[in-house]
Length: 144
Image (cartoon, rainbow, N blue to C red):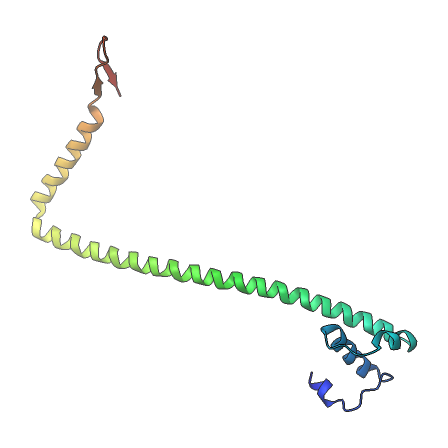
C-alpha cells in the first residue's frame, strides 16, 4: 500500500508497477484492462497469475487464522472458568482443613478414636449382615 501511494503515474511497462496494480486488481480494486494488457506485454500474464494465486492463498490463510483465533478465544474462556472453579475448590479445601484441625483440638484424641472405632464397626456390620427377604408362599431368601 505504501508503494502504491508512492507511485504517482503508474506505467504498465514497468514490471513492479504492473505487479502492484495486479495485486490491487485481484484484491478487489479493479484496474481497467489489466488482463488485456497482461496478454500483450511479455511476462505480464505470469505476473498476473502469480498475483491472483497469491491473493487467493492469502484469503485462505486469513480465513484459517480467523477460525483458529476464535477457537483460541473459546479455549481461553473455558480455561478462565476452570481456573475460577479450581481456585474456589482450593479455598474450600483450605477451609475444611482448618475446620478439621479445630474439631480435632476440641474433641480430644480418646473421643476421636472412639468415633473412628464406632464407624469401623458400623461399616463392618453392614458388610457382614445379609439382607433377608420373604417372598410370598415360599421360604426366606438371603441376598448377599
